[in-house]
Length: 77
Image (cartoon, rainbow, N blue to C red; front, side, top):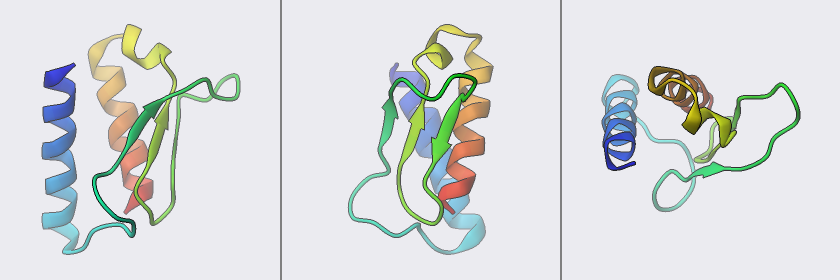
């Protein structure tokens, strides 16, 4: 789990560096693992901090979980 958090921190920093701004909202960007609509792998708030991912993404191949995070974090920005 620690490596997943570290990877997400680097991803967030790269988005901020590339775009020059952060999504609206106080504090850290939160990633929640929650039950989603069937067929959904994740949801990202548009223009605001927050990602929801299916718990299944933790049990699938590690790179899939990261790909879902990259995609959903893109919506935050």
